[in-house]
Image (tube, rainbow, N blue to C red):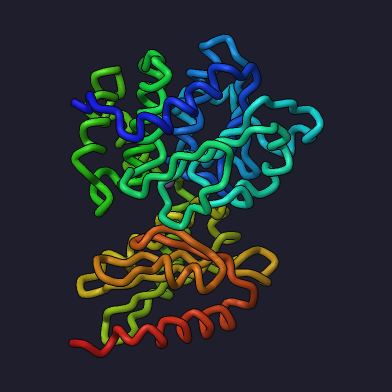
Length: 334
Ligand SMILES: [Mn+2]
């Protein structure tokens, strides 16, 4: 079991700040994913159980996939209140490489003290106290150790949220970030009441009809490039409309080009409704660091999973992205 708490000094510093605070604001990044949602709900539940005011805030809604997680009553969106209506003693940024990743929620971070907890290599080390550990499979893994440092009890609700964060960021314990420590933490969370089959069922075995109809249309655009090492797929604004699908419904579309035998890099181009920007998702199987490609396009992420929002029409963005990929010189070695 994970008896030893890593980063004990930093975690105790963060725990002290939280202990001395009455109003704790927890911020998620734009388009929140399972890791920052699970981590945020878990931390908010614990802070609230300590008799403090806890608010989990995000610019964008939580995808319906995560509706099963406890603690939703502590979550608010920026569209529901003005920055002046919050008066936090401390603001905790979760899973954010920099403060700007919180999007509109950043203007609510009006406390003197900022805490930064993240596992992205590209984190800018902002904040008065920070814990950035790229070896952590998920921010949820770090929040687990923070709760230990706080001496907080991890009940079934908190365990479920953190377990979902781990499952989500490791793709169900399948990605390269899946480490022994991550499994140790997962085991403790199961001991504390998290239900692995229930979480897996919600995250991987349940999908909206819209997302399946969207996938049906998107698959028509599946294309291979670079001798089969690069695969791309498009999700147009029209497809989203026809399937009555949301942007979140398109999240798993990229798994299909990535799954093709021989493909090293997969791209998913998602056209915005205004057709003026395109959300690009990138995945790689084992060799190419797609976070570098994303950063060169103004985005970010991890070596195996990254993304960027690129200005232009679908055709313009495609040309630009293929230009960047051509420059990598990695496609001719077979
Ligand atoms: Mn994460």
